[in-house]
Image (cartoon, rainbow, N blue to C red; front, side, top):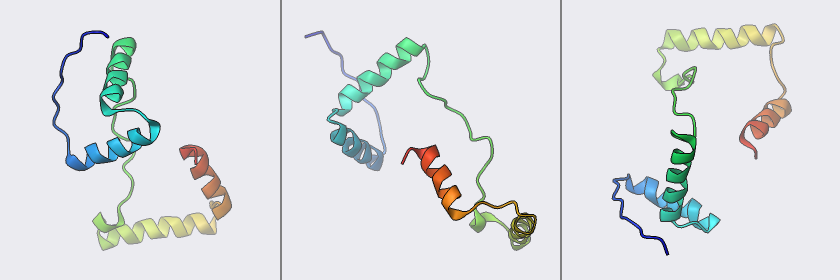
Length: 101
């Protein structure tokens, strides 16, 4: 067996528990997952996935003022009147395709 070294990290308890559940279902111990990640960092010469802010911020109706909410509702209604809508079936199909479910 190759020599090993220890790595100590601070994590949110909930994050650690959730990750352990997912990794456990995959049969991968957390230490192996960390090794996989770090090997990919070396091979990719950087973080092996995009780390960036989303292009647009999703709307949160709770953070909108009444005026802003009304504007958004009016935009949606205008799209509906113009026929710029999708059927529920097509919208769900796109979501499934986007998230591989």
